[in-house]
Amino acid sequence: MHTYSPQIPASLVTALRAAERVAVLTGSGISAESGVPTFREAQTGLWVQYDPQQLATPEAFKNNPRLVWEWYAWRRELVTKAKPNPGHLALVHLEPMVPELSLITQNIDGLHQRAGSQGVIELHGNITRTRCSIDGEPVESWNETGEIPPRCPRCGGYLRPDVVWFGEMLPETALMTAIEIAERCDIFFSIGTSAVVQPAASLPLNAKRQGAILVEINPDETPLTPLVTYSLSGQAGDILHRLVQIASIR
Ligand code: APR
Image (cartoon, rainbow, N blue to C red; front, top):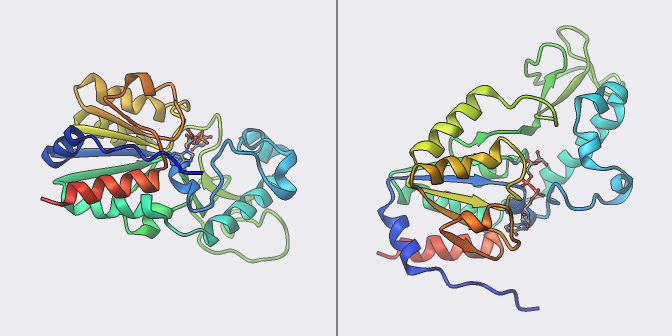
């Protein structure tokens, strides 16, 4: 089936070339083309019977730490096998083209960093990192005794993935930095996110309120769509690649 690939508006290219500060917020949609299922897509295989929103919670971990640890181990496996796609790579190519590019992601897959993006602001943590569930400090290595979840070598408490669960606070510094970026950018891209989960979903609104151009890249409509300056309906990999390619031709 031919996927509709919209024209890139010339005025958007002009605005991107003129922008001093470009902000980008990505969601799981930008990793979909790397084969990482978006957060709200049905789970597959063993996990099909579980709703992610029931697993990614402190309560789920308290009630069944083994199940939650194994779910993240399965997702970490998926992510490790995944490769950055043209959408991630286009953002790497955009970086040197503009005076300041700030990349904020809700994704925990680390694919932006693996693509080569610098200074990625991770609002929801990173699945490839582990931390002690008691003191929250990162843990790089531990004794594999076969117990699941493994235990913290310092205090003996359970280890957990270094991600933000529903109902948990976001990392303070990351969130404050993201808000500052939204409030001073000239152009704000919302890419591959359903724009419903707070506080990330408020960032494009902060940007619009101070006069930034708002661009959404998503094959589907979201609550943000009616508010944006440019709505590019399609796959991030295709649209971003073409946008950056056209903008790079001076
Ligand atoms: N290119 C661009 N967008 C895409 C693509 C693609 N190839 N494929 C899917 N999308 C869009 C979907 O249309 C959807 O709007 O990506 C969006 C993914 O939305 P969600 O699955 O809700 O993921 P996200 O917005 O990242 O969720 C935000 O909520 O669930 C929590 O912590 C979790 O970080 C996640 C946060």
